[in-house]
Image 1 (tube, rainbow, N blue to C red):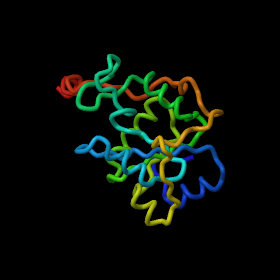
Image 2 (image 1 turned 45 degrees about the vertical axis):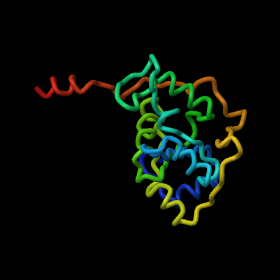
Image 3 (image 1 turned 90 degrees about the horizontal axis):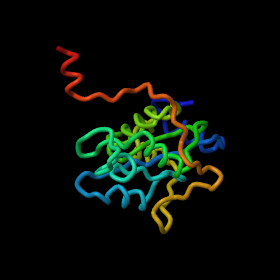
Length: 177
């Protein structure tokens, strides 16, 4: 299992092995909200699931947001519900990538660790490395998102006890003295 980085060749081998795997495309454009969706629709790693910073990886305006700022974290429960809806199961290897130098996929990597999914890795070099490595490419269906198979859908991803605490900057500052 991969828990930090995975190379293009290693990901290609996983695809061919038939091992339980889910790939997430986290591409995003801060200046154009739908930019990541457009990039995903144009091309992505076969079978990849779209993980949008605004819609899936944050809780803008949600009463259960666990932090503040432009893209507050969703609650672990809300995030687990989304993971279940896309079909991620605890036994799967998760691979995350984007087109922006791992700028956005790092958030999903951390969030998966936050809910207890240890087998998650960042695609080393992201989308540019996948293309340079002659990886297969697919385009989105009419809805813009590949659909998970029905047997993989779960009501919620099962949450593990968190080992990653969220604290405020005030707490850090007071602990530093």
